[in-house]
Length: 449
Image 1 (cartoon, rainbow, N blue to C red):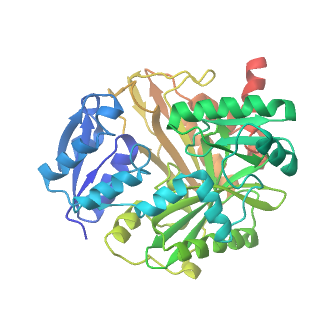
Image 2 (spheres, rainbow, N blue to C red):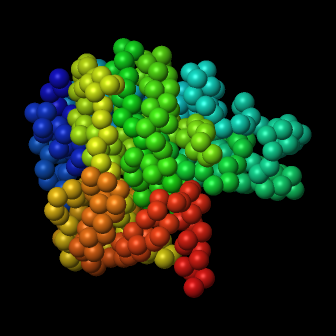
């Protein structure tokens, strides 16, 4: 087992990692920018090191500063959390060159799955169903038009090297394609330094279903069921739940076993998430995230498995926590991402939290690093915290979520709590009858009213 882990992140995920380390008896090192000097994970860690000024490029993305922090403190492993350097293959290689363990997948798997085109090719080779589309990057000429005509409009133009909705455009007709290609390529170049784009069939009303996997790097891998992440705004997840309201046990086992078998063949190590679009009973691979997910607590609540703890244990050479047939799905869980944003315009709302009261009670969990008097800085993402609830059934879970949302208080800044209080009472949400475009259509209707 590792002696000391440096947590190369901030906010709630840094605190989440710190808690897992403490339960494993591992010493912790918190790194922070000058803006995060008063952060909760900094206060609770065994040691802390300031690695630079507020801009991420000068602190949390500053690899030399992180290496220096490891050397100063004697850390023997680094946990990257999510975001920042968590899917940076070069960072994993640099750590290895300095005899430091990267708590995550092999650099080759990060690189392979980080390229959307290569990831799709790999998925096909491993027997994972994919969305019909181009086999590689396309050019804005007859090549793209011919492929689009073959798969049928509408088509989705996507950046090969990115995610988060950037470099992604829909072309509903042939007349739309040229503009969509140019715009997506320009966005991709600006955001990721790579203008390569590819085409996929645009599905009309799919669900976004993701499968959680855990591999030991030696050919062993299991799946831990699915999460439904279909409630999104601008391709950013807002609400996640598991199990999905639209999957039955047979469908879950079929896609889960397919994914687990693929990860066994890949000899994948650690946690990972394979994301699909699901429509008319069919799954279509869209990407793989080679890191812990923001929404990992949903899986923890319904399986009882501590994903971050297992991630650390397996990185240190441990075995999988159980065999596939021992994994059980118990009850239902929902996570709401509470952001420091206006609930209508989604304008960021950094500032000081004057009052803070997290909800409690059976089946209620808050993953957050804020506290009364804490200042949400303007330099990073706007996540205040994640409210996660669990119930014996989806109905019980929804009622518990409604109660918890009404109980939660975050004053001094604007948050998205009012949006969730409305959503949990919407008939379509209660019935589980929604898709990846539902939330934006709902929000457009609210603005019109």
